[in-house]
Image 1: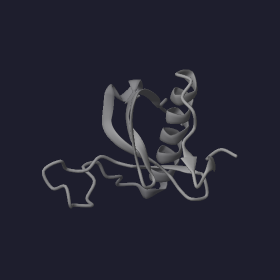
Image 2 (image 1 turned 120 degrees about the vertical axis):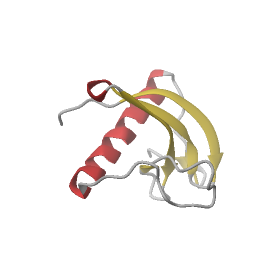
Image 3 (image 1 turned 135 degrees about the vertical axis):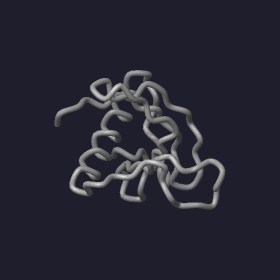
Image 4 (image 1 turned 180 degrees about the vertical axis):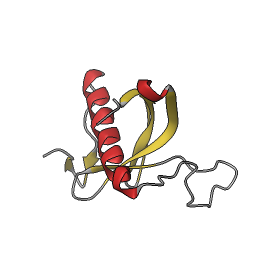
Length: 104
């Protein structure tokens, strides 16, 4: 990977599969992406959804799109890893899904 992804903030907002919102930073690109939704599937694996247009709350269209879909899922996986690292650094417990820890 030619860039490093770092989570720099996380806001807990648990609801259904949503765990909260992350801010990630990619220093090589000099950007931060705010309000990445971090979810937990019923299988206990994390996944992200890119930020949506705040004006169109019912819209499912992300404000950031990947032109090369081969790079989309590795990027998403790296974001999940960065969020997990951040949550461990701040000693946050993993989310609970169906009565057990998500990482069990």
